[in-house]
Length: 87
Image (tube, rainbow, N blue to C red; front, side, top):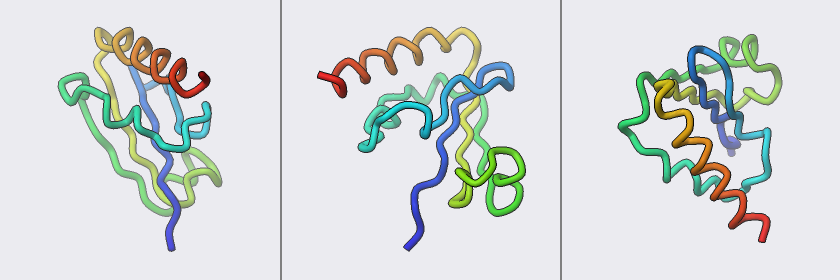
């Protein structure tokens, strides 16, 4: 059985979130991302993902590139999601 891919959010080609960064085993916040925020999606498999992100990418990588104007929206959603998770 394969594990979950690494889930990465980028703005201006800079990583602002990786799914291994903060505790969220349910990863429900992924469903809260507004599709209109996404400028581009990339799927990295095998060596391509491992070269870029190391061993944590052994099950593949899903990169979502957000527009800069939506970075604040994503950050707020993530913060609100973590409040629920931590309480």
